[in-house]
Image (cartoon, helix red, strand yellow):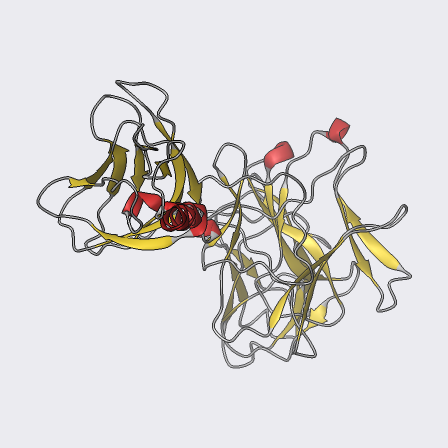
Length: 399
């Protein structure tokens, strides 16, 4: 009875056959099995058609009789590498061809599944020989780096093992729906960064600036007309400004929900001045959504007296003026008024009776309900104007 052969070329000798050559054939079989177990070979892939792999019975060196096959060659398109229908084995297949093309590992005929090996990648291909007409080949991709896996998933918590996670500029973390949740932006030669610290019961979590510099600001930025909001929970939102030891602090707290307030306060545009207080100088809009412009004003009962005026000028709310009309009449122009604004004046030289003081309104504002200027011609006159509203305008306090 003659020898038979396996699909990968191992010779199955019949009883009593091959006297005198039995040992040589057995050694060849063992070499084939060794190659199948862990052998490596290269296979040039044709760029002009399919590359057909076959097995030489009873001989070593066949491509299919190696565990690891590296495909080589220069390709201009995806190319097929075919195998006989009866081959049943698994292979490590590496596409080392040039030209950035796929290599498709498939059975010679039939409509079974095949293994596509992308350029530069390695897969495990299991040739099943599970159907005499349409056998299938299954694959397992081998990722040499996470970049090779476009949908990686963790089976547990990621432990960085005392290392860092590097993010490219303007990249970061997305949520389960693929929307951006946290984006990191880089600065060239950065030495300062954000530190986030969790907290035990009774303490608050912390976001801080740390780094090489001794003094580092913590900057928060909104977009466009967006706001920096301090949200409330069971109580209104608050900001606390602590001492350097963080053992004392003062709070700024928003009104309760029941107050229904959403007004805005804008800080003064002028320079800081000693012995003044903040007051609402003007309001845009009204009610709960009004916008109040703050200004620095004199403490109630106090007037900021100015040096003697000898020529025309524009008055400022909260100031008092010694006015000398010895050389001629003087005009004092009033500013735009806000309720409670006060302006005081005194006849410095007792000459108002001969050279009067004329007080002129700002635009269409009124004095004592009139749009006419106020002429003061009484010797040694002294008085204070107080602004009340658009109907009466400025009223004489000591009239």
